[in-house]
Image (cartoon, rainbow over all chains, first blue to last red; front, top):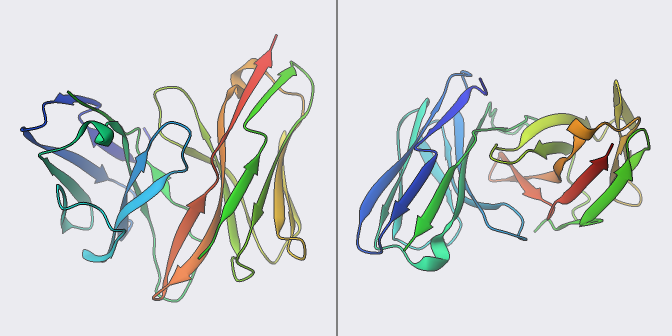
Length: 116
Length: 114
């Protein structure tokens, strides 16, 4: 039990499909993150939500759309994806206090996404 | 912005040997450095972290050292076991608009042979 649960674990979709990834954390954290992990590349931060407010969008294409309805749940809505979007998508959470650092991020096990 | 470099990319050792993974960072304001272990099919798991007010931290067979002047930090695993085989990531924190973010290294694949 990692405290951060992601579903589904695997997803295969065509380029014209619409799907959503889900993340849920049971750690009482107030910040949640989406990362993309591709082979031989560092983890890429995509989106950050602090206190349910989106505070970061690292130039992510609009075909990725995040949603954070509350501090425990995070979604990533996908539509019209490209083959290069195939990757492992990781969700993380942490306890953020404004102006303070040194808080660890805890990751889920990810969703392995394959675009046909 | 922050940049983190990690070496080596792969490391093979015999069971019982020590393993050392090194990272450098660019932002002198970074003050938090976690290490993650990622096993096949799993997400990264935090194994140890160090804050900039200390130079070394140990947890059983794992230790991390930090040299703020040189801006590098290292992970040391002693008495390695086959179950230590995994990909290890270092990271450095930076503050942006009052909130912490992490920049990760590219990972080190550690293989421990029996």
